Image (cartoon, rainbow, N blue to C red; front, side, top):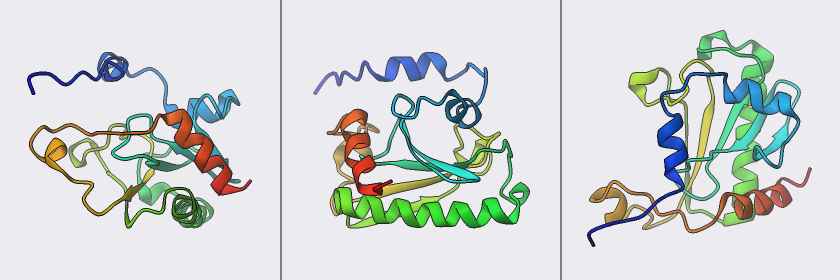
Length: 160
């Protein structure tokens, strides 16, 4: 294979160096949940689909309050983050039946955080055999479902 086309990545590449605003602050404030792929809102945190996922159903849990460090979360935010992660795993199990999950935070730019100024937790569903030659050799992810389709399936699975 000589070329692999992924034109949807162009918007991400062009915006990667732009530092205007914070999606974890701006998107919930816009009240356009379906358009911004916000699946669930709590009192202190919310759940949204990652627009540049590692796999179908890749979710992020973030506090509404703009904090850059896990140590800056207050007790209520920290507790609700874990509760939201639990609900994410349950909804992903209902919607996609993955074989496992990666759950974690990338704290700091050098740790892989694309947005390092607002702490957030990733919940990534995994399937047996989902790491194939495309990811290992080609450094490419193959995502077979659109964000809109994943959002619809997960919205139903969350049930709220």
